[in-house]
Length: 345
Length: 220
Image (cartoon, rainbow over all chains, first blue to last red; front, side, top):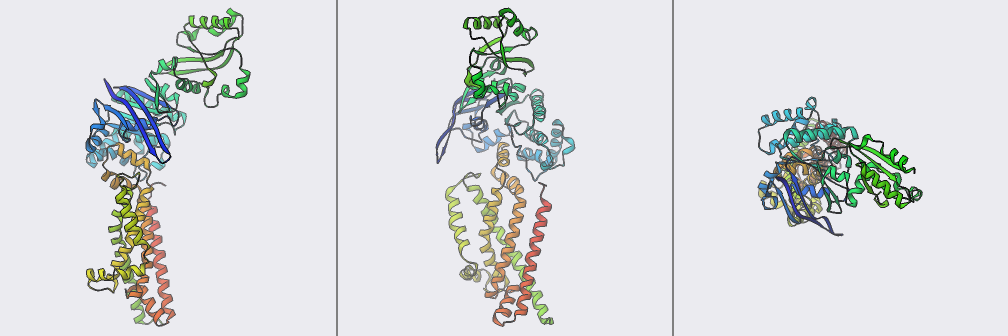
């Protein structure tokens, strides 16, 4: 059963400078218990999309169904009720600066009409869940980014939501803290069975915890599916771009014009090792078998949903026949082989 | 120079000035605070945008009232004061003019304080299913409190200045003494003393306001 279903969603902003279509005909299904990633570069429309999921932004057309309830059909009061089931955390945490940790966590409970005393009790439990019990009296200004996000998560969980929306929740955090927050989210998903939607521009976030992913570009979903499948075999240019960028980080040397010149010649292919194939010295064997050197342009190993994946960018020899024989050999060994166009870097 | 009569007169003047200023500030907030909230909420990008209400209140009521100089404003509302209080001189009569003329300033101060509240925090509250009333009272006014107190201090000091001008209408208070002795009788000694007392009052209120705001701020 799908918890969240988007049908032909569009959102157009009418501004003085003209119309901006932030979302163009987006349809998605997010299942109960998913950790669903929505990834794209900035300006791809992902923040607008996530705000349509709780109607902080009203879509221009199309429908949002939460457990088969269409949000557009609700009146203000019903919508507020529905929002208590859809919690949200943010890039900049958005805690009340003038309230301490416990009072911040109490906020959704007070909105729901829980008494102050009960709210405090529940807030202390939640603070324990996120591992910050000793900070109950602290004010946000005294907390680190990671601690603030933990408080925000505790606050989000206070109303017992069934869905948690994360809008670039780890973008302002360093890599270690990001890992810790992601594993906390994973735990929440497992233990409490909360469906999580993660908006991010970081492929490593998707790799780390998502089971499904949608790739957005210019207001459209370009590709959607299981993370592992998309990682192994990205079809759209947007997906390839994000995955390769992830491999080489921001300043990929292959993107440099001078380097591109040097690399002219044979085809560049990306090969992906799965668990079984990673044990065999495949590249060495190719070189020995064909008696021709292969230029390795880049290599990396990643953890995709708990499975080790090696990936490598190699340049095959210019001789087309030899190159296709080599590809065939690699395929035989159980590797995924795919030609890379120079412009995806 | 400091005869018993003069000392009594100055003490009474201080008392009247404090009475006028504090009561007027309070009343100015009673009127101005809700207006400021309405201005902020109905603004474009506010919780409940309403261009008509915002324009009417902002441009017509507030901007026009604020552009009338205080002395003229006090004269203009003389009949209203007489209707409300029964007379148009004395400290209580002055309170009417002071609070009505300061209310638009208060409204603008409140509006700008609320504008400073982080939009992300308001969005977070909306995402929790909060009503607009909850957001205004439990989020915006709480988050803006330091700025609101600083604004209130500025209003208070401005009202001290206005109240001294009231001396020309026989308002009582230190301004009245300054006008009577300094302006009508050329007794500059007394006038300077009243001015010094007014300066001390301003410094005192400013210091107390700053201290209070700073002691409540949880951001540092």
